[in-house]
Length: 79
Image (tube, rainbow, N blue to C red; front, side, top):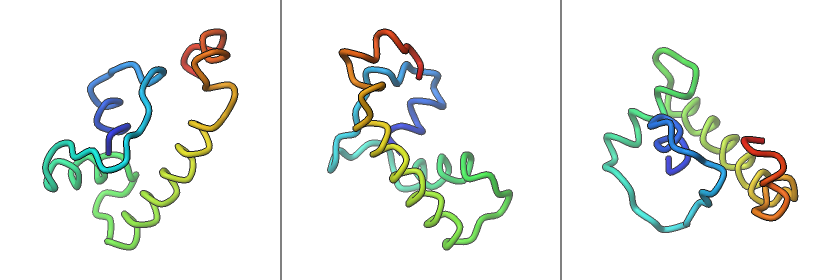
C-alpha cells in the first residue's frame, strides 16, 4: 500500500523504501487502492491476496537490487 498510494499520487518512488509496521491510511483506503491496481473489476479475496503477495515479492527484490540502490540508482533514474 505504501508504494501504490505514492505511485497513485505520482510521487517519486526512487528514494522511497518500505517501512514495515508503518500505518498509513485507513483500511478502506488500502482496500480501494489495492482494488484499483489489481487488474480485476471485481476481485475476490483470493485474487487480492495473490496480487499483494506477488507485488510484495517483486518490491522486495527491487529494493535489494543493486540497480535500485541510492549509489547506482542515480545512473538509472526511474529504473
